[in-house]
Image (cartoon, rainbow, N blue to C red; front, top):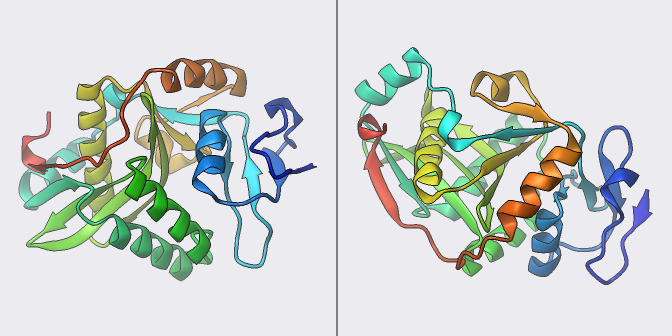
Length: 231
């Protein structure tokens, strides 16, 4: 495992361990984070650990136009009065994601991580999608957008189907904007049920290179739509 220098250079992805651990150290500066994402690398560590950088093989990705919306989810979106928005409550979304993880098994969304992604949000690279019900924030997700790639980080749900509704809203928006994929990082049964595919690292790297090279101006997203009106 490599220790990172002060520059933003990372080892070749093939140097990652079988679990996907590639490097340790460095910092969570905006420049390093953006460099990492462009190369298919993301930070993931717990309190008390050094910064750990990962590039798993296989990689879980979702193609926005192919997100699976089940009949039960479609029913919830139609009947629960959900309203979906983007970039209206980024700080709250990442904070609740961190709290939800702490309640489950401890969080990797440390205060250092929260500060780093809030900085990316202010720069127009990090984004949140929120689900509201009766004016209350009941679900959401956040991630990073570079070029035509979206890198999902975490999601939370306070009522049934609220986080899935946020994902459906994100997928609809990304499809309209011509995004290539949503990086979901690690394969799980939950993600697979939503349509995520496990792809080899080499294929992911090729698709990533094409997506991040497309020029897109970093800017705050600002949209809102009733969930029942999603396609």
